[in-house]
Image (cartoon, rainbow, N blue to C red; front, side):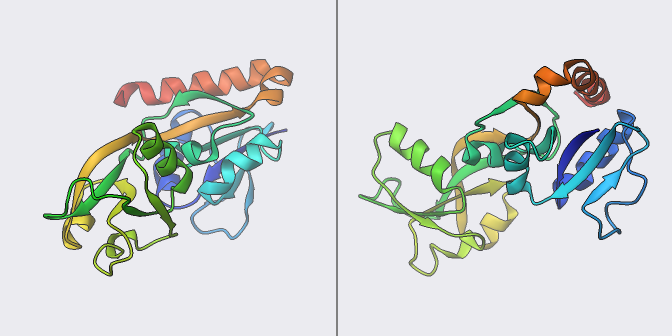
Length: 209
């Protein structure tokens, strides 16, 4: 039995139609059931429904053979022990630096509010910029208004939330979309079956590519 871990939330809404086009459908509706392990109509494949941040860990340590999660999560996780064979092209957005309107572009030793602490730290370090990271799990947009931070690093889709909170998008750190990841040991042990799933998903995204 192979196990495919899926991310809860908006990414799940985009993932399920793609899986259906690839011939993978749960026997119960993931949006209504309280179960976290779901059988599919494929006799050798089941689904796990997890928080996006947990998907790489489950796949890395063998709790799942494959997973689907955002590139933002993988950047923060560092992708150790994983293959990333496919960009699924769904749940697209950007990981960006944002600052208040009319704020200095490069204040000395700025504070940066983000839940992507490791990714932000690597980004600014690569530019030779010294920053203090303020690790938040949400509501980053209000941090500059309250004097908590000079910048934020967060996902941006339309930019409307930034605008509503007096912020403007700046540098793009990474283009984000949902990615298929595979446990390295599972790829060796079940190569043919996993390869068939990768091919089916690749074919499923081709019409919208």
